Length: 482
Ligand SMILES: [Zn+2]
Image (cartoon, rainbow, N blue to C red):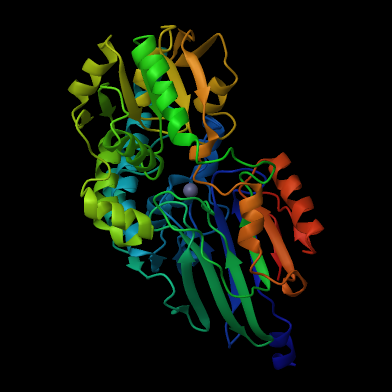
């Protein structure tokens, strides 16, 4: 009777984030061990972003007990995948966190930066509450700088393609996702009383293009696949013309109009891709003499980590390194650490290129640059990445007459430009290519996450047309037996 009961116990998965939306990636696997005890393995612990107070509320409640989690596997360092790790640890999680060594190093700078943002958001609300004579919204920040070191202390580096036992009977293998430095697709081989299960989690899938990182790697046959869907409904423009298009924008805005070209960019990934392309233009003698400011201490530190892990870059890039030891720096680039210098740039009227975080324009120095730069019709904002609905980035893409920044109404006269070819996310055809190493008849279940509704349904229809069956689009908090 007891044995029969054990045999009936299945693996379960609950989607606690990036379900029907892009941010907050967090998927909980419940796995019965040989004795029938449930082991809990969390995939990613990302922050919800872009919904204002609603995001903050969701970030404060996990939907599970952090103390009950046995281990965490982290796909990559982006905040919508890693940003709640300090909160998880603050709430009692003390198990191991598995990530690639590059992801671990990127987390050291990302999470501390995130903690500072949490502290300053909290203090800002305290000040406003006092002024307005109301109670503060929260009694403490989501987490603080002091919570970061204990969280980092739990991270263990696991290299690509090296199987590693993360829990009894649960083997993890990372493959290169090609999305940002250190990014991984997660493959679990789980031994249960009912047999062996192969579960794959895509994390964020990168591009099959000639840029800094290698193509996403193919992976062994899986029974269950959890796949991101960010661009499930469309293809990106060709990447070959991106560099010329970027150059054209620089010429037209900075040389022709004597304006500023403001480029909001993720500190990790996008900033390095842009610097590398500008560096190539510089080496070819095509880049006009326009000062380039990288106004983000986080980007500077992240660029250092890209340099340190140059062995993870594409073969061609490593050849390029032999000829030019600094792929991200050239004459005319200034890396700005000091806040005082950043403020000077806000006031600056001369033409220049400013690359600053955050990519979705929800935080960071880019908001100051936008506040000062948007009212001037000579300037332009070049949007090169994905912005989740509700973020300032998504708002600006609609080319509004005005936006609110730091509580002020800011008129938008600057030109709003978009380039999707710099995306770090696989497009529709590339997501299909990522899945093409699989025999659809052997994949028993596919879950689509990390996308807005129209991308999720479009990708579901595409995969179904290629023979994948049993494709689900989970809702927030929905639980499935595997
Ligand atoms: Zn990502």
